[in-house]
Every structure is written in structure tokens, then in C-alpha cells.
Length: 508
Image (tube, rainbow, N blue to C red; front, side):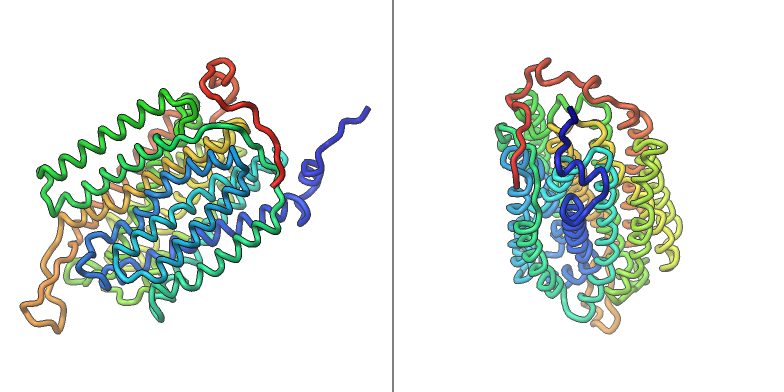
């Protein structure tokens, strides 16, 4: 008797077609490109936004961090909701929240309003682990790494378009126009997902760890708020020390809660897997390094030469000078997926973090003209391309299908938490090296405070240090190297650690 093969598997083994997994891959890849385009288009606009709201400019780092902080909370929750109710349904919910955030940003009239809607927009961060989960559920096993590599490579395409298009839009229109352009496209994509994508979701019945997400989100929020207010309130003030103490208490409480709850957002059972733990720790440092450089370079490029900057006046030019990073990611991200099969994802991850550190070293030593900046950004782009793709590949290799939703969500969470810290940390370092500056043509009494060259250098030194720590973690833990998940971590039946039964298939 011949064995019956599921239709989706039959199609996938032969080829990707527009009637099977192929159409899913195309749509998910386009969504990934759009989201990264939207996020990166803001980078050239950061100095412009700060100048529009001078009385609130000290909060500019939160334009990036608020989105990432909400994403850190939403990502594991949405990943778990996807496991329970179906990844397509929850992904559409995430896309709706993301679109609402975009519309709000387009109509923001203050820094506070912009940051608030950026936080709403952070709900969309849950799209990424849900997208990878859809691939894991619907693609033949041998095509999963390639499919994940395609989606990950589209991140780089989005970055490439976003840096140039964002700068161009800000230069000739304004930053609100950028949001006006993209929110109708995201709304259209939501409709396309509903009518076009047909999935076979693996669903399970589990509880949602709302308490864990709240403890984590509030803990990181108090940490970032303490860092933001340290310069103004004083680092030894009761307010700042109290925020740091509260943050530590909440994060300790988070760990203790995750140890006792049945279905945690950060599974200590999964963290016992060397592949997953190593990828998560490295992801944290990748997030810090990536967003720290994007927070600092636009301001450095547009700073006057009198205080050590390069005096770039055009937001479009800022995008051009950062563009080599996007080109490098576009070239090397697909290669990272291919080479991971040959030499191991752990080695590609280590190489990526090393290249990121080298990129930081170059910008520390050589930043007197735009050509040097572009060279450093190209090297850093190689590192980011290698790191981003290898992170998800390590998780895909190390986790079983039933846990891939929470495992990929955990990895995204660690990277997002690191990313939310990066911009605020950069702003804190920069605020410690302010110098008085009298703009040309302004009366002598008009004095503004700008970050000196030394402030940027110390911020980049911090970024290099975090990249090197991640590199050492990748070397020591070797995440994903020869791991067999089922042998590396006790099963649920052995440990009785979860109430989740085996997955059930449901159409979407």
C-alpha cells in the first residue's frame, strides 16, 4: 500500500507554486520588506523630528525605543496567541494594530503623541515570529531554511529602500508624509493576507502569560526611563535610583514568575537548550548594536563641523551615507543562509558579530569624512546581515515544531529588548558630552547644546563592546552547532512542565 502524502508537502517537495507555499512566501516576504522599510525610513528623519519639537527633544530616542519596548511585550504574547488560535488570524490582528499606529503617527502634533502611537505600532513586531511560524507549519522541512532566508533577506531590501526613500521624503516633504504613504499599503496587505493566504496552522491549547509580559515590559520601561532622566534628575537622585531599583525588582520578579508559571513567555525549559539560549543572548547584543548606530550616526552627520560633526544638511544625504549598510545586508544576508548549511549557523553568527564590531572600530578611528563613514557602514552591514539571518536559523534548527512559535518569539523578544536599550543608552552617553554652540547668523545670546565628537566616539565604543561580548558568547556557546533538540532538552512528558497538549492542525 502506498503512503498518502499531504497535498502541501507534495507541492513543496517538487517546487514552490503560486497555488501552494509559494504564494505564502511572496506575501510574507513583501510584508517583511514593508515593515523594515517603515522602520528604517525614520532614521534619516530623527534630527528633523528633534528640531520640530525642541522642548521635547530629550525624548527623541523613544521614537525608536517605544516601538521596540511595546514589541518586546507584544511579540511573545502574539506568538503564543498564534499557537492557540492560529497564526494567520493573530497575524492579521497584529497588522491591524500596526496600521492604526501608522495612521496615528501621520497625524501626530507633539513628541508625546508620536511616541504614543509608535508604541501602538509596536504591536506589529509580533508579525515576524508569526510569519516564521506560518512557514514552519506549511512548508516541507527541507525548504524551511530557504524560505526563512528569503523572508530574512527582504529585511535588507526594506532597509535599502527605507534609508533612501525616507531621506528623500523628509527632504522634499516631511516625516508625516512618509507615514501617509505607507499606512494605506499596510492596510491593503492586511486585506491580501485575509483573502489570499490559505494556511494549515498547528494550534495548541495553552494559557497566555500576561503577568510575565507585564513584569518584563514594566521592568524594561523603568530601566529606560531611569536612563533617560539620569542627566536631568541627577544619577544619584531618589527618582533615578528608585526607578533602577524598581526595574531590578520587576525583572527579578519576572524571572521568578517564569520559573513557576505553566506556560511562560520565556521558557526556562527552552533556555536549557544551548542553541536557543545562545541565540537569545546573542540576539540581545545584536539588538543593542544595531539600534545604537542608527540612533547616533544621523545626528553625527548633521552636527556642525564646529563641534566635530560633518555638517550634512540634507536628510536624503544622510540616507545615502548610511545606504552602504543596506547594500551589504542585501548581498550577504542571502549568503548567510546558504553558508549556514555548510559551516554551521553558529559560526556565521559569530562572524556577523565580529564584523559588526569591526565596523564600529572603523567608525571610531575614521569618521572625518563621509567616505570613511560609508566604508564603516558597509562592513557593519555585512555583520548585521550575517547576524539577523543566522539568529532565526539557529532557533529553527534547535526547536521542535510544537515550540517554534514561542522559541522564535523569545529570540525576537531578546533582540527587541536589546534594541530598545540601544537608542536610549546612546542618548545617555551623548548627553554627557554636550558643548555650547552659537549657530551661524544667530545673535551671540542664542546658544544651543550639541553633542561633541567625543560623545559619539564613546557611544560607538559601547556599541563595539556589546558586539564583542556577543561574539564571545557565540564562540563559547556555539548555538545551533550539532544540536538535537529532543535529546538536549527533556520533553514535556518527562518534565510535566506545561499544560500544552500536542498541536492540532486547523485551516486558516
